[in-house]
Amino acid sequence: MEHSDRQIDIVVPESVPRFCQWLRSPVVQGPEGLWINDYPVIEVWEKPLMERLGMIVAGSGDRTVLEIGFGLGWSADAIARRGCRHHVIIEAHPIIAFQAREWAGRQKHPTTILEGFWQEIVPTLSGRFDGILFDTCPLDESERDRWHYPFLPLAWDLLESGGIFTYYSNESDAFRAEHCDLLNRYFPAIDLLRVDGLHPSHGCCYWREDHMVVPVIRKPDWWWRDMRIGYGDSMGCATWIARSRSKRPG
Ligand SMILES: C[S@@+](CC[C@H](N)C(=O)[O-])C[C@H]1O[C@@H](n2cnc3c(N)ncnc32)[C@H](O)[C@@H]1O
Image 1 (cartoon, rainbow, N blue to C red):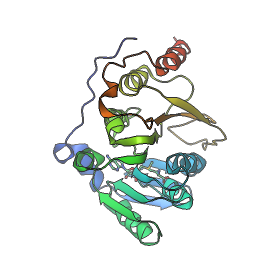
Image 2 (image 1 turned 90 degrees about the horizontal axis):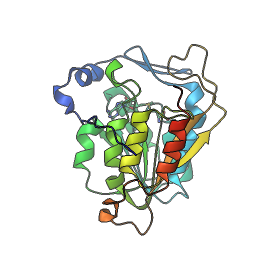
Image 3 (image 1 turned 180 degrees about the vertical axis):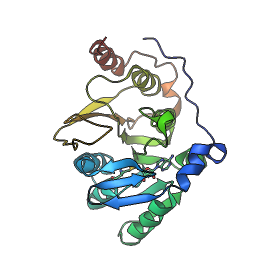
Image 4 (image 1 turned 90 degrees about the vertical axis):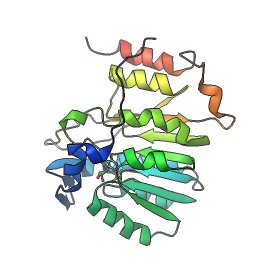
């Protein structure tokens, strides 16, 4: 399996105009969803997907969960319903972070809201997590379809042994090649979960399918840090990546 040589850089937010602009962007919320800077961040049809992702990372309700991107709190609600030992939420937009803090104040389980971009907060985290849910959004056109890629190289080391990581994949059956390369490079094994029953509105500009296929990545209980070295392509993910590539149009 060949890897793309394209570099996945983690930018330093404070010096990048799109991050500065985002912090000042107006927020519009309603029953149909959330818009920031006139861009649809989450729409109501995504609620079942959010709940599913939340349930996956919450597991049986005794985990320490890291959630990145609060949005309308649908996945956070799902995590709270399952229960949680500690729920850490990173949220960049000041208005949404304020709402996240209000939400946290109503929860029974310990909850910590870290306001800021994950790019600056994640490197400061010292602990590991039993569940990680990554669901942010592109801040501008340059990030469209690839805003989640820079997080993938970091996820494994943030996971506790026995932990589980999932995210809004933005993929249906045939994953983008760059996405496959990253999964193949950074994770030894990946399950794919197809979430059906999605009904995006006719006007939705970022999703048209009735399903989404999300990677669910488990770090085995017996895993220790250096195991990854030397794993290469021999594990199961190469198989499905090859399969999904072979289905790519063209
Ligand atoms: C799609 S919404 C999250 C939806 C949420 N899972 C739910 O169930 O409602 C994305 C959120 O990520 C936040 N966000 C975007 N980029 C971010 C970044 N770099 N770091 C932290 N939060 C970010 C946005 O402000 C927004 O609240």
